[in-house]
Amino acid sequence: MKIKVLGPGCMKCKNLYIETEKALANSGIPAELEKVEKIEEIMKYGVLITPALIINDKVKSSGKVIKADEIASWIIEESTSK
Image 1 (cartoon, one colour):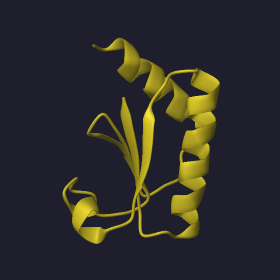
Image 2 (image 1 turned 60 degrees about the vertical axis):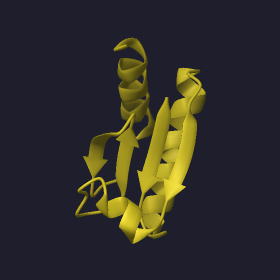
Image 3 (image 1 turned 180 degrees about the vertical axis):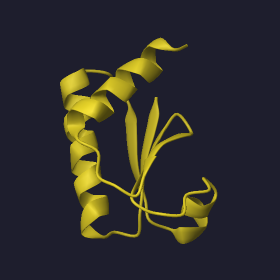
């Protein structure tokens, strides 16, 4: 599973990354977590407002910091949808 946090490095982007780390720890599901700060890469996902959370190339949220428990539910959902 691949998870990406998109954003130029603002405080909201950093907070979303932290919440995503917590979600991964709580879910116990292995995943590759990446922080994407380059605008060219962010634009490839069609995201207009950051921070954004991408799980397995699907945009799960954009423009807000999601809490770890909601992110964990998305991670679990994605891990079982294969």
